[in-house]
Amino acid sequence: MTSGTCFTALLVYVDDILVASDSMDSITTIKDCLHDKFKIKDLKTLRYFLGIEVAPSPKVIHIYQRKYALDIVVDSGVLVSKPAKIPMEQNLKFRKDDGMPLTDPSVYRRLIGMLLYLTITPPDISYPIQTLSQFMDKPTTVHLAAAHKFLQYINVAPG
Image 1 (cartoon, rainbow, N blue to C red):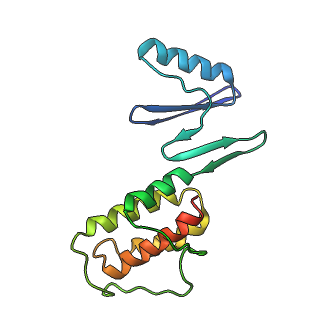
Image 2: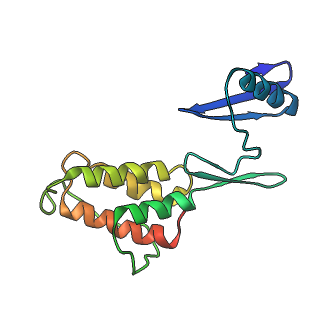
Image 3: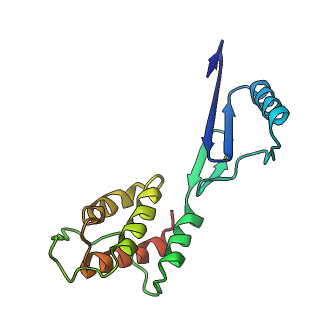
């Protein structure tokens, strides 16, 4: 929403609302309107939203997904003991028929889905995740092993 020289944006996700503006008066007005209609909890300065950590500094706003990345590692149930320095080996090629089909492909799909959301912040993981996402239809043991190997990198450089 733009009003004169003021820019205000509302980001709504289910029952979470993020209000951003270049005018504190605009933010206060919106909060007051919301408070009149609903029971709201004002968390003040944004620190964490939808798996994204926000660290404002005087000139820049930094965003990270460290906690979300580490949650993926824990959620996967894979013990990551050997760290990886790179997200994926260079020139690594996968085929649809590499390995045995997974008995429960939803495990792979869920993991890749979480990793796709993680690509919001660290640009170095976009290519490996895009590569692994090509096998969501019929993932195999080789594809899942590559995703688990990728978690070794995430554990070292979590976003």
